[in-house]
Amino acid sequence: MNSLKKDSLRKWPYLFLAPYFLFYFSFFIYPTIYSCIISLTDWDSLSGVANRKFIGLINYIKLFMSDKLFYKSLGNTFLFMFIYIPILIFGGLLLAVLLYRLNKTSRLFQTINVLPYITTPVAIGIIFSFLFDWSTGILNTILTQAGILEEGINWLGSGATARLVVIILIVWKNMGYYLLIYLAGLSTIPEEISEAAMVDGANKVQVFFKITIPYLKPIIVFLILTSIISGFQLFDEPYLLFSNINSSVGGPERSCMTSMIYFFDQTFRSSTKLGYGAAISYGLFLVVLVVSLIVSRIINRKEEES
Amino acid sequence: MTKQINSLKKVLFLIPIVIVSIISMIPFYFIISMATHSTSEIYRGDIFVWGSRLLENLETIISGGFLKYYWNSFYTAALSGMLCVMISAMAAYALTVYRFRARNFLSTFIIASMMIPAQISLIGYTIEMKNLNLINTHAPLILTWGASAYGVFFLMQYLKNSFPMELLESARIDGSGEFRTFISIVLPMTKPAIGTLFMLVFLWSWNNFLMPSTVLTKSTKFTIPLGIQTLATAYTQDWGARGAALAISVLPILIIFALGSKYFIKGLAAGAVKG
Image (cartoon, rainbow over all chains, first blue to last red; front, side):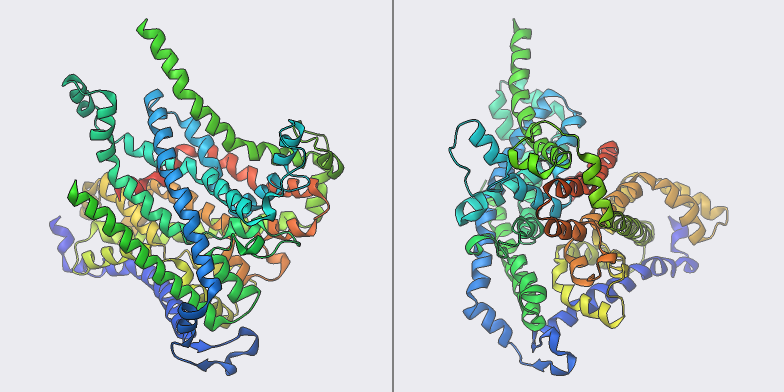
C-alpha cells in the first residue's frame, strides 16, 4: 500500500468525495438549515416571502404545549408501533426459523413474501381500502357469502376497526422483510456450534435460546431500532387508505392520523403554514431521537445484566 | 419410523409458511380480478374468478393518460439510480482505498447521517426547488439521490470485503491514471453491488409519494404514485378501471424484482447483517 501514500495521490480521495458532499450540502444540509430557520417564523406559503415574520420559538412552544392534534398523531403512531413491532419481531423470527429448518436456500418463499414490502405503498393503501370497503369490499363479501356475518362491517368507518386495518396492513407489508433479514442472520450462525451443543446433550429448545437468539441479537436490535425510525415515517398507506372523497384525513375521528400525515396535512394540504410545518418536522425529529436513545439504552442495559 | 416423523415435521413446519405466503399473495389476486371485471360485476361480488373485461378497463386507464405517468416514473427512477450509483461508488472508493487524514471522520459522518430522517429537510428543499424554478420538473426527484448515505455505506461494505486491492496496485504500476482506473477497473469489478444498489434506488424512487406530491402539481408531470392517487379519486364509480390502474402500476415492477430477487434480497439484507 506504499504507493498509495505518494504525494501525487493526495488530492484524489477528495476529488472522488467532492460530488457526494456537493450534493449533500446543496440538497440536504442547506434545506435542513433553511427548514430550521423557517420553523422560527410565522409564514403562510400563500402570503409570499415578504410576509415572513420572525417569531422565535413560538411555533415550538405552541406545538409542545397546546397542540392536541400533534399529541394525538404521536399517540396513534406509538399505538401502532406498540402492536405491530412485537408481532413482526416474533412472527418474523418464528417463520424464519421454520423456513431455515426446512430448506436453507428457499428463495421462492422469500421472494413471494417480500413482494408486499416492495409494492408501491400508495397502491397498498388503495388496495386495502378496496379489500375492507363497506359495500364492495372483498372481506365483507367473503364474510357475508360464507354466512358468518349478516351484514358487512364498516371496517374503515369507526376508529377501532380502522386502526385494526392499518395494523393488518403494516404486518402484511413487512412480514416478508423481517423474514428475510432473520434468514440472512440465521445463515451466519456456524453450524458446528449448535451441533457441538447437541452432542453435549442440549435439546433443540436450549439450542434455540442459548445459541440462536444470542447470535441473532444484533439483528433483533437492528430491526427494533429501524422499525421505530420507519414507524415515525408511516405515511403513504394510512394516508391513501382514507383517500375516498367521503373520508377525512387520517380516518374516522383521526384515529389513524400518524405524525407524518399531520405534518404533511398541516404544511401542504389543509393549511399552508410552512413555519409551523417546519416546527412539526423538527419536533418530530426530536421525539424520534429521544425514543431511539431510550430504546437503545434499555437494550444495552439488558445486555449488561445478562 | 424416524423418517416418517421427519416428513410429518416438515409438513407441520411448512403449513404456517404456506399460509403466510398465501396471505401475502391474496391482495394481488383480487387486484388482478378487479381489473378483469366490470363495476357491476364487482358490486355483485363476482370477484373470486377472473373476468373478461381486462382490455376495456386497460383502455379506460390508458386513455386517461396513464402511460405518461409510467414514462415519468421510469426515467426519473432510472436517472436517480444512475446518479446515486455513480456518486456513491466514487465516495465509497475514496473511503475504502485511500488512506488520508479525514478518512475516519468522513466515514463516520456519512454512516451517522443515515439516522437523520429526510423529512426535516423537506420544506426547505421544496422552497429551494421553487427558487431554482424546478417545480413541476422531475429534477427535484432525481437530485435528492445525489447524496445517499446508504448508497455509500452499502458499496463500502462490498469494496471492503470483496474487492481485490492488488488489482489497483498493478494498474498503478502500469501507469493508469486514478480516474481511468476507477472507470475501467473498479466499476466493472463492483458490478454486482452496483446492480443491487441501482435496483434499490430505482424501487425507492419509483415508490416515492411524499416528495413528488410537494413538487409536482401538473398532472402531465405526475409519477405513478401520484397517478394512482388521482385515478383512485377520478374513477370513483369505475371500480374495474381502478383495479386495472393498480394492476398495471404494481405488477410489472414486481415481476422484474421477482426475477432479480437473488441480488435484490441480498441488497436488502446487507445493511442488517453487517451493520
